Image 1 (tube, rainbow, N blue to C red):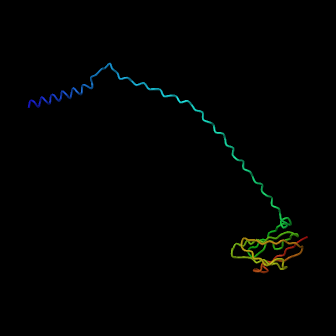
Image 2 (cartoon, helix red, strand yellow):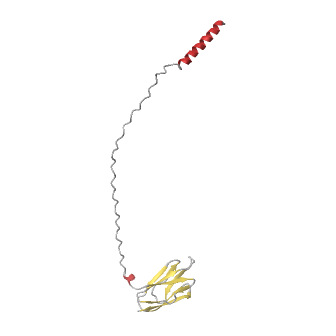
Length: 162
């Protein structure tokens, strides 16, 4: 038993010696602080300034001036509106070379008008909703037109002056 105690004491002394050996040392010796090595200062390298690239100037193509046809250069265009079983105006007065243009403004897209010339100036012409029919008058006189579908309710006379 004594041997056991003696071993325990020796072990404790050895352990203390190891612990204190790290604490005892040269106090005058200070570990040198490493001096930082200066980094080289980079020299600025000139960056070439990009030259502005010229943008292409858009060229505008000249728009051709339409050449009026003989039909377009002569006379005025007068509208006649077809709606609700009526024509407006019923008795237009125009000049030779003027054109009448009939428009179907009936709100019901199923309704249509069949425009006829009592004087045989044109063949009967069906005008559906939103569409038109036009005729150029080349001789002076009085001409009667009407809607085949609605008869006298839709009859008009155009007076063509020289």
